[in-house]
Amino acid sequence: MTAAPGPLHGILVLELAGLGPAPFGCMMLADHGAHVLRIQRPGGGTALMPAEYEVTDRGRAAVTLDLRDEDDRATALDLVGRADVLVEGFRPGVTERLGLGPDVCVERNPRLVYARMTGWGQTGPLAERAGHDLTYLAVSGALSLMGPAAGPPMIPLNLVADYGGGGMLLVAGVLAALLERERSGRGQVVDVAMVDGVSLLLAQTWGLRNAGLWQQGRAGNLLDGGAPFYDTYLCADGRYVALAALEPQFYAAFLDGVADVAHTASWPDRDDAGRWDELRVCIAAAFLQRPRDEWTARFADTDACVAPVLDLDEAAEHPHLRHRATHRPWAAGGRQPAPAPRFSRSPSRAADGVADDPAVRAAWGLDAVG
Image (tube, rainbow, N blue to C red):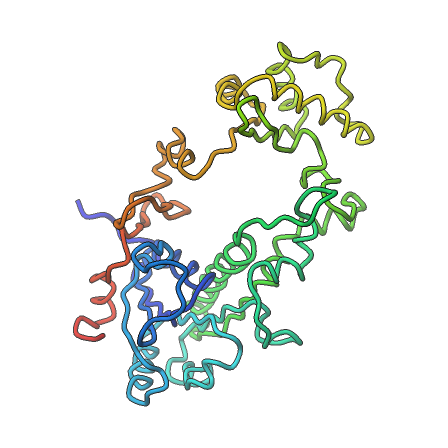
């Protein structure tokens, strides 16, 4: 039986090759069935790794065009005329100078959703400036909230601005614009800015701040490592566990699990924030009594919210993630994350490597192009 096509089957996405959040967003669109065709410049561009290992490039086909060349630019505009979505991740004004700005493209294709992925957005005093994930975390206020109270802010990889506040926001914007197009018959320009996305991710934090329930500074609040029952702890073997027993019933389950190695009845009341430092010392001393995997096994069948801090290889072999096939093989060796979310009637797919997808080329009618 042939698998049902993904939920975005038939949607043609034209991607102007770049780095970071735009390719990640296009990967997600491809995972869910969109036919993503990448326009790449002659000789390629800046890359962080050999192309055969770049997971975020999966599921594409590609054509090589020099957009400064009149004939190649005409070819690109022909592709724009067929596209449902165009995604670009350049600074404001770059595509206009290349002759592929939104005015030109929407004139060619009024139904086009033109998605612009930048750090600062299309307008504002910093719109023309360079930046990276860390830059947008810093200006949004998010970076000030991460890390130990007495140390510098800590860098959460490039997951928050690039991918959470960037690539995923791009996908949400594209899907919303496509849905609106079904009603209006017209496309539109989607201005996706990572600094906006990170700020959006802080919605709950702003709510707590407005209510006077979030203090300035790091590691002094419920969810930033300030609460000793929401933190990481060193174990006897030098590895770590994560404790996230926020609710009283989960904390009670945690206390039951450590009762044989600690006199938990004498521990400070968890609701007394003034004694959190004392409670943290007690919890830390308890976890130091046993190795990580022993704690993992001990809490496996409880709701204590104790989990091992796994490295990448361990995570890929975790029984729950294996059951859900959360990771899949990668053609050049190693693993890749599976598409998410999952659908009951239209399964998503993850390409095994970066080789041109013939189905994408066929959907674009480009078997003999590029």
